[in-house]
Image 1 (cartoon, rainbow, N blue to C red):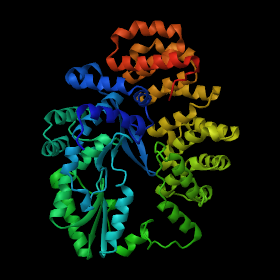
Image 2 (image 1 turned 60 degrees about the vertical axis):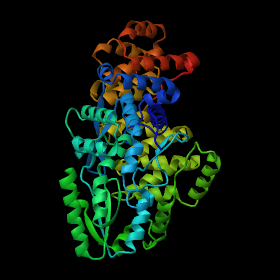
Image 3 (image 1 turned 180 degrees about the horizontal axis):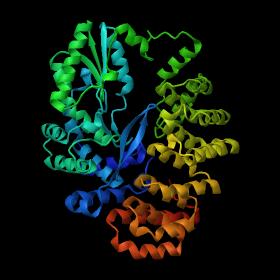
Image 4 (image 1 turned 135 degrees about the horizontal axis):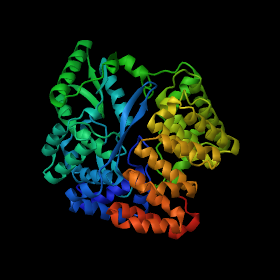
Length: 538
């Protein structure tokens, strides 16, 4: 569906407000602003669009790159883009989304299962929810039953190695909207800190752009009658002999390197017999569980946990989901994972997500067991923090205090777990719920020690959330030395200072750009409507 420029602005704001800006970091306060005042946010996007070159100068196009854990010993760069520029980038991509989708291998070929563009203004979704990882897995199983061998491989450091010039060429082949292409390229160049490669990981704009980049490889593989399917950078190639599988491996490696400057991960490239492949898939009937526990884990892995709280039948769907979950011993399955030296990440992540649907007593048990084994859960630490924050109100005082103490101890001891910036960001979002003096001391110390703009922004909001007016007042005196994101956080936080905050805002109002003024207006409206009952969100 081709959408207009104004529709692209609307969908970009609605999508970010509902689904977030990235799946790597906690959502910034701006997402709440987008949700509460979409029309005001759209006005800013229109202003940027009308005077793009001037807007680049007035509203700094900033991005924070921070490490996020992958497995027990790996890392990847995650990027949080300045929220208003992230929304504008997404609107540009949505504007040409239909052109990109038309250029891709068609869905009916059953080849490419990742991020098929299908905008929906009712649900605010950008991609087709009926096509994804599950369908990719099921197609792989079907093909494995028809062929003797399966080549399993994925691209090494895919997003960071995407060359902007090659992406620009792909865009020019897909769309005639030269203005959108030029602006996308300009934004990516600035996000990449003036080098010509790398896409920010985690957002829908980069996902759709990366799919277009691989489209040429998709078509070349099809033209050579290589039987395969793909999800993002994961390939499954099917062959009738080991020799044929090796030939396909050589060809795919050659096509990626010559056309896109990309290569496969050597350690993850495997050629399996179809039987071996099917036995490793939790969705395949051929994967026979040897014990009751294994059978339960397999069945749980096949369970569809997708639930839309905004659906017209949300209540019925939620009850059906809980009924399905009641068939499984979630806490017991989670406990068995915690006894291992290394968890099964996919299964454990699903189990953690299911905790929010458990009865309160079982939530307490599950959260206690997780916080007693945070070292084992290190690869899925953000998932633990997200579900803990979601169920905090359902936990008893003992469990809550156990959670807060564990997080304070991690941070105070300099644990490797919270040395990872993404992990620390999520930990702060849980710790802010605790109003104790011990937690306040930890947050104050972090504010002195941290240099990450994203974390320092969140610490300012955290101190305001707990009503630490003395600290916010003192921070106000350092306004001129703060980064852009810290300044925005301080502007919002200043509303806890009452008259002092008002006089200070009046003094800086003229120097603020339109987006900063938009944030100020939003915070003022919330304060006026709710008075002292309003707590700065984080």
